[in-house]
Image 1: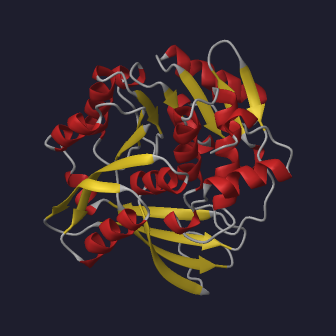
Image 2: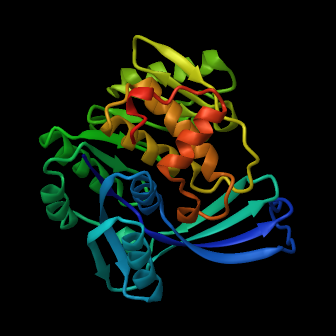
Length: 314
């Protein structure tokens, strides 16, 4: 089973503060560090940490960040042969994290903004025999759409994390097998604030009507809502002591793809992804927070969650 990730690779510059600043306000921070990130790279590392065979397709700059980013992914077990050096700077994310674990993020695309149609040739050959293609929106939208089309040509499952959120082309919806917006992204895509279960279901139905096959709405501490047109269910999160929510959604998507590739039913895969996402919030940083298979299963067992015992040999 192979997972392919086509997307962004960033270096995260993280500062920690007591609370997020208001507009025009200056606050004193308590900590600063750099850590590898980017939604695409995060999801690739999440898959690798869980034991999946995963290939990353993307770009980094010809700078120190670029070298470190490729090296870090490779050490985590990601195939980085599809990650090319690009003239200019690597992508950077400026992240502010408050004591509760909530964050705000500003992205500077750098090399990610230069991902283009030329990269589809490398993607095309890598998709052969793959189970899932993970996509996000930190690279140009027209390339994301073209990548989804390539995946359909290879009969590969397309999982789209619509972040940072922007309007999606009508044609793209019909090529998405699973879309995984969080609350903010879901509201932006549908115009529906997902304040309660009825609103969540209404938003999910709207996304299905646009052509998506299955919808998973990530609701943070509330869990994840699953809707496939026939069945709907809110799958509760596992409560943990959160210190940093950065990349929790990426941990979720990597775990979701891994579980589906291992043959789990979608509901069980979402349970597994919930646990992975929860674990990632208990650690600082993006890629360093990604949990292992053993850690995820242990958390699920401790909380009486169903991880599908037929796959306990993972």
